[in-house]
Length: 118
Image (cartoon, rainbow, N blue to C red):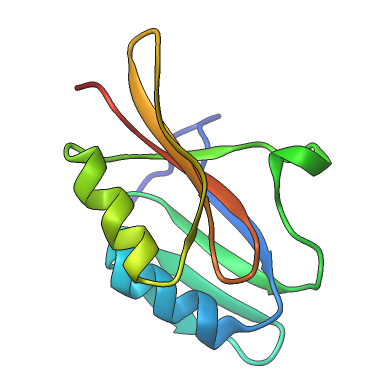
């Protein structure tokens, strides 16, 4: 399959406990994982591929990280799934021009967001 030239192709996060982040993302978002040993674990969400590299640092907006934002058609249901799957809500649902979103941290402490246009 041809790659999309000059488009985001892969995203990588830090993680210390691959099993914990895998369990969270499988339960919350149905991501699929491939284990590449003690230093790396890859994932696919069905649209974008990525991975978790062995590291103790976290990816948060407070430390200057880029915020990765997922889309959900039902924002409240997704927030509840994130919380019940082991994520922590960093900022509850709020409105912005064009939609609404919330921000969460995964079991490692990486911060992501979910938005909806409704």
